Length: 320
Image 1: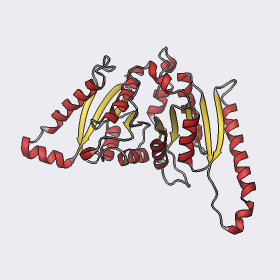
Image 2 (image 1 turned 60 degrees about the vertical axis):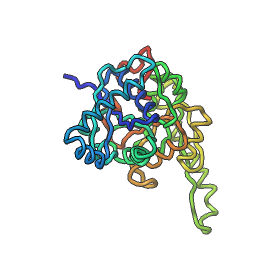
Image 3 (image 1 turned 90 degrees about the vertical axis):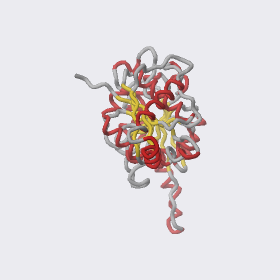
Image 4 (image 1 turned 120 degrees about the horizontal axis):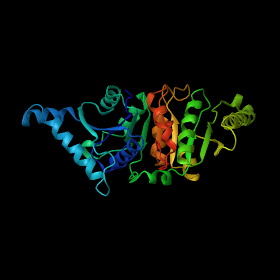
């Protein structure tokens, strides 16, 4: 028996989560996946509830609240998934989201980059960054200001161009392959971007910097062109090399070139540390568009959700 893909969507009942939930439901509807909607309750809240209402009261009440939030999010249209699953857990938000993703066999996590204010304000933000740093499955992070697609057909209108920032490491090939699959399924252009970071040198070596910078740019341009040539004839792909701080330049190019989705890798890097989650998170803070983040090791979800035979169906929608 073939296992159905599973989309996991953590929420905290804020307006920002409505956009993430709409993306999650659109993806699950298109790929006929299961949808698991979850929230993480504070341990102190669980203790208080146990003392006042008795043990076992909080979980079913939270599940009912999740169901009400789901139906309220789609009050303007028929719900895309008639029978999603609802589950609440108690503990540290990032750790519980990662644990639930592993326990449930999730193929994709869809979450907002920001959540509620007040008592719930710690749910997202730093939580999202930690999930990006430690996830083993792809994560689609939606901006807090986005309402998400009301219908599958709206995804193509939103994702006008796919931007894939690559560092030209070995892991870039997989990232570009996934980005190209999404762009083709949506019938939108793909832009490959490489950011050449400035070299910070002492005075003794500063004289050689101009020639080194030119050589780095030339190598990057040749590498990107080689990637594009490997795609075959007439791909809707272009390349761009810029100089500066990666997250700032990625956000600037996304704005200037009207990109609606950024596909980023979360692989290890000597320059950025063990995981690039913090770079991706800074891009989210600056770009205000969805980011599809790929973990460093192959996960069952990315192939299943991008290369399904129906990825180019009449709806023209995919993981976006």
